[in-house]
Image 1 (cartoon, rainbow over the protein chains, first blue to last red):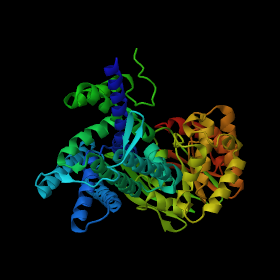
Image 2: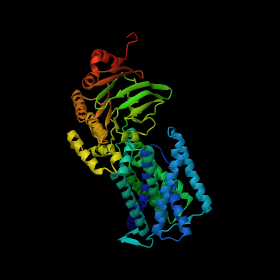
Image 3: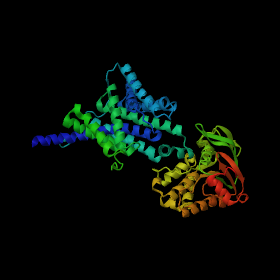
Image 4: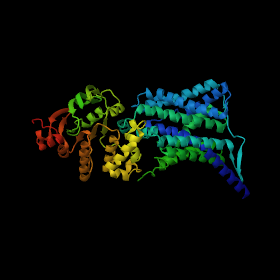
Length: 298
Length: 240
């Protein structure tokens, strides 16, 4: 009985940690979903660019020793720059009419970013600064890790700013108009190319923040992070519903909690199998995402 | 006001417009009638800058519009109410209207708010639905929203592509009442219609477009209404 109780406490603790870390998945998912919304295209290099933003901030840190908050800020700026470069290389000058051309361009970009990172770091993981990693907030048998709390708070603020931008500003009107009805958006005088470019910059900044927070939570940056974050970002996008920002946020937290629960119950090597199964459950029952109506099967 | 000269527009190898000439006079209601597939919507989209013509010229108060982006065309003072309305379904009525004033949002915010109030006075049903998503409105309400959204750009020339399409008869009456009102307030209107009977009642001048070419240019009194209707729905008979 007592063993069971301890297990239960540990399970709840795992789920809580997973929810905090899940905000990084939510940010990556938002990036995929926003670009899909405005351009109807997947940007496969998004998670790679996010982590590259964090790498760029490590490089800046190696040149000049900066305090951790400045390092995170540099990652956000670098993320925005990478977002614009990816727009130019993979979308602006690639024929948009062909669905495969831009998809393959972004897959190529993902691999290119990874190769550059491996080359520049000799494949060695790089330590990443964290804040409040010596803090532990305790509630009875539970404790919340200070560094994860920090990651959670920064992510929530970043997502809050993004929601404000999308739902309360002129740029947000343009972004939503283009994603809902591109012809009518142009008739209103909204420029498609400018709106697309701005969407890449904004999602890039969000990705840079996500990359920095991933680094701060894990403690190191490694090229091995790219693939799992790409896959989980895409899973979050599908579970949340393509194009849905609120969906991506909820799905990010869900995937974070779910994978940590299964890591506790079944171990780290089995964990991702259950995340994939969760994806199939959603594709079968709610192919339109978490906030859509159930699949109509007859 | 608007001078269209020898405009040809193609979709790939299919030439939808084959040298269109027409003009729209300031302060008038001008109608474009013609059967399905004649190229009416293609012409509207070409004037608005969404489609690029392969040859020809479109002048608006002397300024050349061919080669301009759709936003530049809006800035020149032309707004299009597109076929099938194309409202932004997941934005509310207010946001749809604000999007219509997109080019003016930065510097003329106060004027935009006044225009918003004016739209709600002109279209009281939109005021009742301010916070409702446009996708949940009825067809007639969406059409009013599409008209109001175009007016938010403060156009001098309003292009309307089949505004009565798919609407109930009462709502069609309402749309034509709105067209007369707008004209009364000094807006020039270039109207594409399938409903030739209604269109001929409001038009000062009309054109027939058949197979990508203008085949009639004159006033409603010059051609018997049943011949207009015959040609607007079915096109000319080969012998006729």
